[in-house]
Length: 286
Image (cartoon, rainbow, N blue to C red; front, side):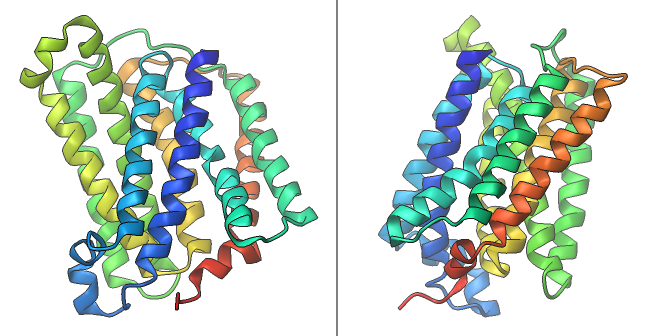
């Protein structure tokens, strides 16, 4: 479990690098309906965005390795350290100083994560999902994500990036759930992967989530999109892990400490996203 957590931290670091690079690329695309329809086509022509995708692939590989060793309910929450990494990378890239409020927010996020993991003590799953479990999970995921995307398309103001961010977070959590099953199959029989439907579903879910992420980053301030993405991903991951793989987490009085941990984590995420360093990334690039 310690190895899985360390690999998840490395995945979060790669994702932080990717987020900064992708955000810089999306800011160079005009915010109008025509540009939004061809957003991905416009981004693939930008070297900065392609470097961000390479970093995202690195995060994918570290995450897959983490999921092969630990529970989804462990790996996905650990990956919220992506946001503190993002702050540090931004400060190094632009020569900015992280003030006391930012460090307090990082401490709240890190402390909340530690409290939650110690209280929940997520363990490896007790069973493998059957066909009915996958069908139900897929249908529920598609319906929920479709509803969020609809809200994001129709809404204006902060609700748009928030809805898109949550949709992307759920999509990435579902991708991680499929990834966990794929890594297990690869360990058992690598030659069986081409015949395994979860491989293709994982790729499709990952690509759809990536598109949702681009629209979340492009449709509004990072101060709204980032918390929505960062918080929804681990929560959805815990639900997927518990329902599909039977990953146990503590209940009873431990729920109080788990709630405190999640609350502290959410507070840290929101405060970090509100920092001037993050908000400065919303200014158009010259």
